[in-house]
Length: 289
Image (tube, one colour):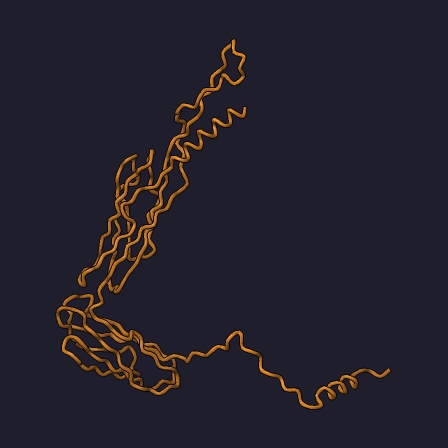
């Protein structure tokens, strides 16, 4: 009986150890986009190096700006495939890192030991057990496996705004603050107009270097109330998505400083006679017998 269980368990271990992953050439694609590009496609090539077919369960991403799909839903042993990811750049700038999850399962048969009756003249009680032979019964689905793929996109910022958000504290002086605009492009780009979403803000635009550097001065009329607003900067850039840029401003409540956790408690002063007075009061409050 022990020998029977041993042979069956060995067959099961051989099956489970055959599960394999998809073999990717690379799991990370890095690309430097051009200023005019609106989308980018990244291709991840792989091969099924296992002994059994693999079925794709799901292809998912961590952002709505990137979608991905495989060219098939099932890959046989030794078959190659690819995952195509489409990144919609839109107004994104700087380094953008997004991930894709590829979830799949592997199908394979069970190998069942073959058992035959012992010979009539045999005195060996274990003679009827033969070595396991491959005998497919029904497919077994392995636990799902997930491979994470990464797309890193470097999008140039040709109209640089510093700072992106300008702040005043409520009740502070309504001083003028300056935003620096720098053009990082082969062709010069001029600022045509700057508009504020709030009437409380006065705007002045100054050209420092034609088509390359500008200063935008913004001054609030009052800082009495909390306010959040936006500046729309219109340019003559030939690339449509760079014709309008946004900067932000806010009038906010000043941040309160929290006392450190390890700060010592304030000393308690005990006035002379306080202890005697408290004792006298306590004695007076006691009922007389």
